Length: 172
Image (tube, rainbow, N blue to C red; front, top):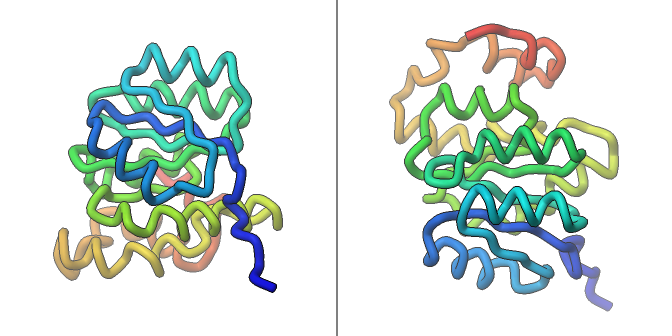
């Protein structure tokens, strides 16, 4: 008997101002109950009136950090999915503001396994970022160069050593 997908039946709010991204997420996460929002106001209204297992937030175009704040205030697990805000600083900012994970849109095909990891970490009471460097480190190295961690070395070393509390307190 095949093991049930942990995402099966999960209710997830997907927020992006690009229709093609919403459609791609719907294809990749067809096992979930997905609710769309394409603007900050729509997303805020849906977060305030509905119950979600998780939210996936774009950053640019929908004020993703404002939505992340609302998600955090409502104890919603939020995953950031972005193309235009793909910087090392935005990755760290997302972590510090409470995002469960940060996914470049170029890695959208990994979204199912990322969400499963996030749910598993939540169930175990662990940090959602426990394997972020394993999943995204090579991509960041190819995008930002071999020394991409140098500008925030203490943060990345703490994250790599799973020193979550220390990493979240380190300043830019």
